[in-house]
Amino acid sequence: MPSRPGLLDRIERYFAAAPLADARVQQLGPLEVPIGPREWPFPARPQSGREGEVRVPDVRAATALQEEAGLPASVEWLGDRCRGLAGVARSAGLSVEELPLLVAADPVAVLLPADVRLYLVGADDPELARYQLLAQLAFATPAGSLAGAAAPGSRAADRAAPVEPPPTAVLRERVAAGRTVMMVAVDDGRPVAVGSHQPVEVDGHEVSEVVGVATVPRFRGRGLGAGVTSALVEHARQTADLVFLTAGDDDVARVYERVGFARVGTSCLAERPLG
Image (cartoon, rainbow, N blue to C red):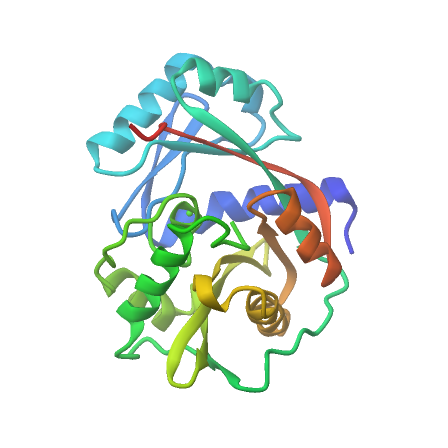
């Protein structure tokens, strides 16, 4: 596995490349602001090497552009690379969360319960909207998330999801193109857990992020989230040589560490406070 600095460099390049297929990226001073479909928003990020240049007016200009486009106001960065940005974001009126960043170092296979079946979701799946609603309802309930951009399968959805499923056109196109790989766990014909990984080519090699892992409340505690994550990692590693995720908190990070993930840093997310 690459050294920790090398890992962070690759993850930074992943985040820079991830929006390019779905959004146009505008440069606002030291920030890059992706503007794309409302169903699939991407946060603004500091340009590589300019993290320390971000100031309050830059954050305000970026979030104003996002909100004008009907997108959530959000800025994301690696805390290990830009320690002063949290204070800048708070001064610009955003709330900041510091979330554990982990990579799949030595994955452990986790089996789902015998009565649960796992399926790879196709772009033409007629139940796609139902899977989206499952994830949104799970994330709207405390402890709903294991992996932590607003459509299910994106990290923004992991933070605050509506209860109405968005249109499925963007997600269907991403699944068809291979930019989102979604899996659903089904119990007695009912979807009970979902998750995705999102591969992106970085410097000629594939990197993928696990996102949107969620279990409906009454099925929690049965290892479904860990089982879905394990299957996603196994699928991703067939073509990707780096798989990573952002955990919702330290307790969730410890769950991932027990199944072969290793913590490599901190991902910071600044958003407009609700209300």
